[in-house]
Each structure stands twice: as structure tokens, then as C-alpha cells.
Length: 468
Image (cartoon, rainbow, N blue to C red; front, side, top):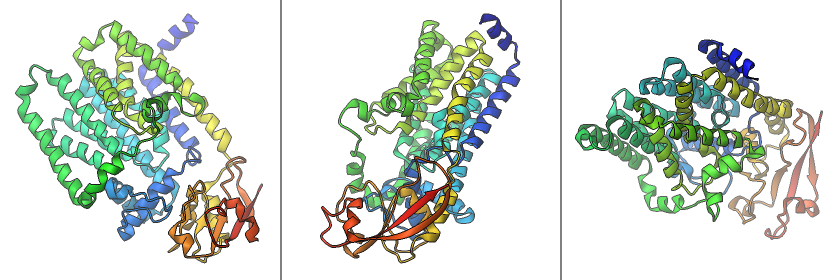
């Protein structure tokens, strides 16, 4: 085994980085349109953006869940994605292309940040390449959720600090918070930059720098008030809506590492533990070039304890610190090629599995068929949230989540009919050959679990789908 490792170590760094970059881009191409096809948040996020961008609605008018995401956060997301999608079309794939572009830009920014921190050129490049390869970034790159833009703004803020654009860094950090509350993690990275560059003793001497950053944050706060000021009274109530009742359910790092499907992030967890142990054992935190990574890891970890939303997606905000810590140890031992090939061997089978599992699923074709065969009568629709992409061109059409809690909704009280669309063919993952409409008898309305809370008869249209 050792001779093999020694042989691999002879591979030039530029070759191993090129191989890793090619694999990362190939994997992204391989899983495009197939990654997270169960996810409902693309439809939610883009429907919020759609109705705010075109009609100025700040609260959910599609899924009837009382959501007001754009009312409190995310208007930058709505403007950016809305402006682009207005040109290229409101398709899920188009929104994912925007997110992929943002993650690629973020990877370049972290390469530059690592280089400006003092990492050697190829080790700094490895930071950016690993961001393109690892699952937390691949996942958000293939979604329309706010994380891709939030992470990009966070990255741009930290890069601005290293370029000594302190006012701009504060402004951008504030904009990342407007895009999504998790953008507040940028403040933890800003603190890491300040302490690593200037130290505690000389910190008070850097009043000019602190004032510029603070001024930028104040400017962005004013911008936030312009966008969301009328909803400040309800903001605190919205912020208190956490997930779960215990630390395991609320803590997003626990959810990320221990509750992800197939426990696919456990290998990374143990790798990070081992790397942090070596980092501390070798006292690499005493080396100035590595202090930003160390302080960032601590500050972001502590910040994570304050967040009561156990969303697995949020794990990506800690990964830059982990990656920098890892590259610090790897640079100390001169094992860059081994690290890169190891992560390629870890991630490539996972992406290959995603492709193998879902390769027959064509979301664009599915939504096209559903759009064409569903009656254009503006009835409310009970179906999967992703059916919104089939009907976002229809006025006065409401799509209701298929796991709706069951309260009587306004659209149901106005009509004695709705359209029921069975769930996506997630089990077979095959393209649809043909679909037909069948009018169900009202006695069959129990399929919707609606009889217990609807007092009138519901006639339901159901779409039967025959897979190839």
C-alpha cells in the first residue's frame, strides 16, 4: 500500500488539481436535473420570487401555508433570479444554472482568499476545487434555494476584507443577511479575519477598519429597512419559528452530519475530527497564515449553536473553515495529491449513484405533459409543490402541497371542485409515455384525506400516469 501512496505522491500538483476539477465539473454535469428531485424548496422559492418580481406580492399565494419569506428576507434573490429568468424562462433547470454559476464564482473567491491568507498557490487552488467537488456545495448548486447566493455574498464579503475594501465588505455582509438570515454567519468570518490579521491587543488600534465595516453594515441595515421595514413587527415572531424541540432537531450541524440521507456526511465528519486533532497537536494555529481558518472554525461553530433551525443545507457555511484547516495540515505534510484523490474517490461513487438512480427522470418532460393534459379551468390543484412549474403561467391557479395539514383554505371554500394530481413518479424514475384524465366519483375523495374537514362534496380530477 505504501508504494502506491508514494507513487501517487509523485503526481504533480497541477495534474492532481486538474483531475479533481475535471471530475467535479463532470459530476455536476452528470447529476444536472437529477440532484434532489424530491426537493420541494425550488418550487417554493421560485414561486415567492415569481409573484414578488411580477406583482409585488410578499406572501405566499400558491401553497396557502401563510409563508412570507419575501416579506422578511430574500428580495435580492427575487430581483436577481427574477431578472435572469424573465429572459431565459421560469424553468427549474434555468434557476439551477444560476445557482451553479454562483457556486463556481464562490469557489474562485475562496481560492483567492486562501492565496491571500498565505497558502501556497496549488493548495489555495485546492480550496476552490474542493468547494466544487463536495456534496454540500454540489447540493445547493443544483437548487434554486437562497444558499447559493447567500454563500456567494458571504464569500465576496470575506474577499473584500482581504482586498482591504472594508466598507464594501460590511455592505455585502449585510446584503447576505437580507438574502437569507444565515448570511449572518458572514459576521463570524469577519471576526475571524479581524482577530487573525490584527490580534486582540492591537484590535482597538484599528478603529478606522472597524468603523468602515460597521458603516457598511449600517448602510445595508438601512437598505433592509427600506425593503422590509413595514414587516418589522412580525419579524421576531417569524425568527422564533425553529425546528424541533431538542438540540438534535434544532442544531443544523447535527442534522447535516448525522441525519443526512444514507449518512453520507459521516465520512467528512470523521475526517474533519482527525484533521482538527492534527492541527491542534502540531500547534499549527501558531502559524499566522493558518489562524484565520482556526478562528473561523471556532466562531462559526459557536454561531451555529445560536441557530434553532435544523436545516441540513446550512452545513455548507462551516465547510470553508474545515477545508482551510484541512489544507493547513496537508500543506504541513505536503500531501496535496493524496488528499485530492481521496476526496475524488469518496465523492465520485456518490454522484454516480445519483445518476444511476434517477437517470430516467426527465423533469422538463414531466411538467410539459402535466401542463398539457390538465384542464385549464383555474381550479385549485392538489399535488406535489413541483407541479407549480407546470402551471406558473396560469392565473388564479393554486397548487396545494400534497402533505397539507388539512385546514380549510380560502380557495377550497370558493369551489366544490379541485384537480388532484398524483405524486411524481419518484419510485420508478422513468419518463412518462402518456397520461389520461379521469373524473373521480365524489366517494373517492377520501384519496385526498379531505372528507374529515370539508363539509361539501368535492369532485376530483385525477391524472393517471403510465410509465414506459
